[in-house]
Length: 245
Image (cartoon, rainbow, N blue to C red; front, side, top):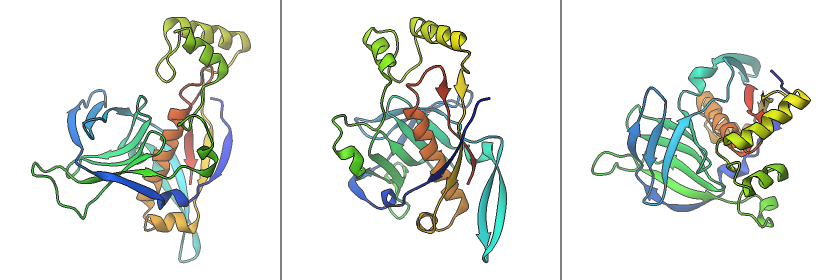
């Protein structure tokens, strides 16, 4: 396994700056336990085809403090990402819970976000209310011509133009052959797993009421969204792994 270590300080501003779109009642259309696939309808225009995601190793440590003293918690990676899903076509990264009715939270596309509204009543058929809203674009994206927060390498763009590779989906046979040949020639690993240690400040943790599970969930959603934006990379592919908080 090839990996690098990265320290990341997450900003808190995106937790507060929002533009409301409306209240919706997501509905599960189908769910397959054997494959982990779920089809969820958000609105008449948005239906998500979700697949299971992974961003954690088998175990990882969460560093915190209790009464001013350092504390460490060993967490099970499989449990931490049990509800983590993605839809690569809609660039969606979501936490999906079905414990007491369908409940979603996370990222859809560049600026669209969704979160549950537990204080609101359910629909007539028992669906939970959610807010669908837009987060403000970061300043450095506002001057970009393209309305997206990910890019495609130039060599991949040429293959896409030739119809050999999908911009976000799996490679076709022709496209895969080109990258396989390159990998063998330069002895590149097929996939690299950058090991990410996330550092969150006081304000970020306060936004989640210092709830360790909620904080870890938020990191999982963001790392999962980042992996979607790396999906255009080939030979090696890139899959972020959160190894510590």
